[in-house]
Image 1 (cartoon, rainbow, N blue to C red):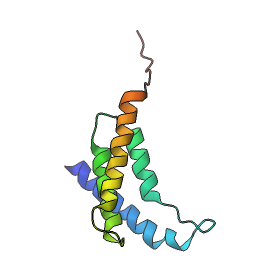
Image 2: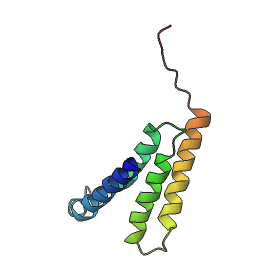
Image 3: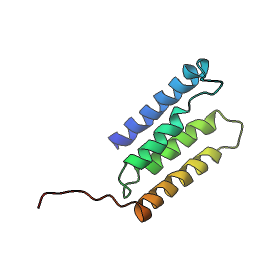
Image 4: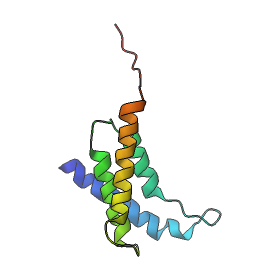
Length: 102
């Protein structure tokens, strides 16, 4: 439970940083979307059997939905489906051979 609260606080602070600070410094007319990048990396670097990446995608989608013009749940749905797709690809198609001493 403590980890989930810390995750919620981390994404909240990242969202505030992105919308209040990074919005004033676009690179070639584009604003860096840190929330999407961190969500993507969180799902890729986490073990495929764990579900914190899906929860993180839901949190980020909720923060996006709060300040968007679309209906509530649109970004949550998109990001959770993206997280599930990443997990499925990692489980089915990616094999990482770990070299362990014999």
